[in-house]
Structures are given as C-alpha cells and as structure tokens.
Length: 83
Ligand SMILES: [Zn+2]
Image 1: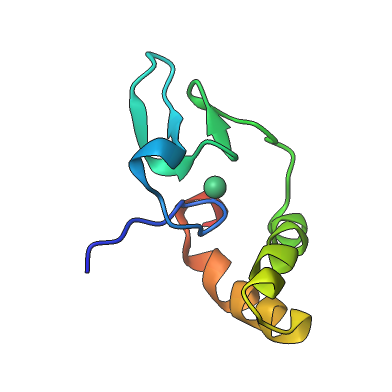
Image 2: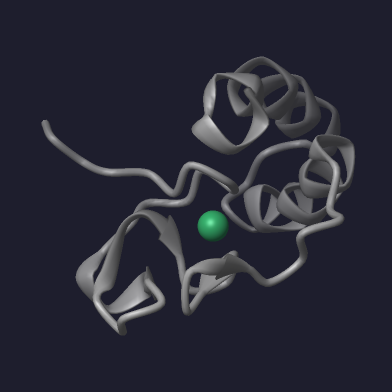
C-alpha cells in the first residue's frame, strides 16, 4: 500500500485530485482543494478549522461526528502542513 494522502486535509491523493505547483506540475503532497499553483488556497486556515471542514465528509462515509473529530485530532497533526 503506497496510497498518498494530502498533507493538509488527509484525503487520498490521486492523479486527478492533485494540486498544482507554481510551474503547473502536479503536487506530490497536496490536493487541488487545498493547494493551487504553489500556494494554499486558504493560507489562514487553522488545523481546528480544517477538522470542522473534514467532519461532514467523514460523516458521509457513515462515521459519527464525534468519532470523526477524534480521528482527525489524532491524525492531522502528523501531516506536513500542521507540523
Ligand atoms: Zn487537501
């Protein structure tokens, strides 16, 4: 398993969901929702805000909000953007 995750929002990073670098190349680290042309789309975003954004997506896959928040609070701090 070498699945890449966005280092900002933790969603699986596929070819078509990759963000772009300044030179137009695909980002190896961030998705297109977080990152475009070499910059974060929401540079002021805090990790707590990111958690709140992610919870509804995790609820869509059947997880309870409380559980989703708990998982995100464990996992997001390990990602590059939040270190
Ligand atoms: Zn992302």
